[in-house]
View 1 (cartoon, helix red, strand yellow):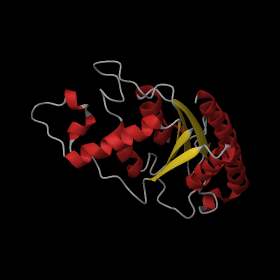
View 2 (cartoon, helix red, strand yellow):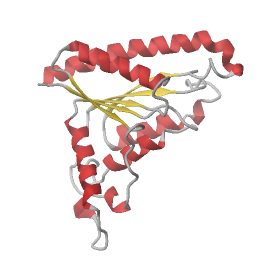
View 3 (cartoon, helix red, strand yellow):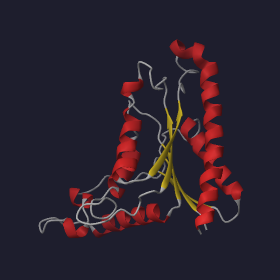
View 4 (cartoon, helix red, strand yellow):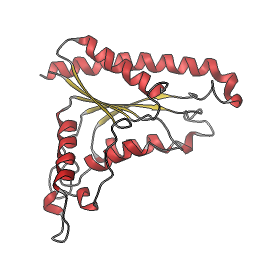
Length: 220
């Protein structure tokens, strides 16, 4: 049964652009067949606690003798990692907040990026290599390559570093720029482009859901 892990992190459940696009992907995934399941984790409505100790950054066998870990925190980390590993495809809604990612999404990353468990350190521990991930990045301004603001998009760079380079996942980004055009007077002239960007993101979500959902089904 192909399984999608769907993560949302926007603090605006009602009007969020990233949530609209991830919902479009999830709906397209469901539409492939009744066997295509979805685990939805809303990191804003049900935020994860921050790591209670830096010891959780390491696999149990890599912790020092002085480091102790609360059993409940370790159980939560195990749950999150197993949930990630078991998914055939991972979908992440990552709006840009202050040129970076929401703290709720960062908390999830801190739980699942673990040398010796999900990241190679003292052995071949790389269970996520090649796993498809789709990241919907919604940005208020225009951050496309070549624009003046492009170098300040730290959200995409951070997620690429963690998901692609560290965890080894096969990451596809679906950017949606100019989401603040209807709200910010200085961007009002670009409202048509904002609408076109959203439509392009919807189309990309549909295409990727069909592509990756079909590939996952073929691997069963």
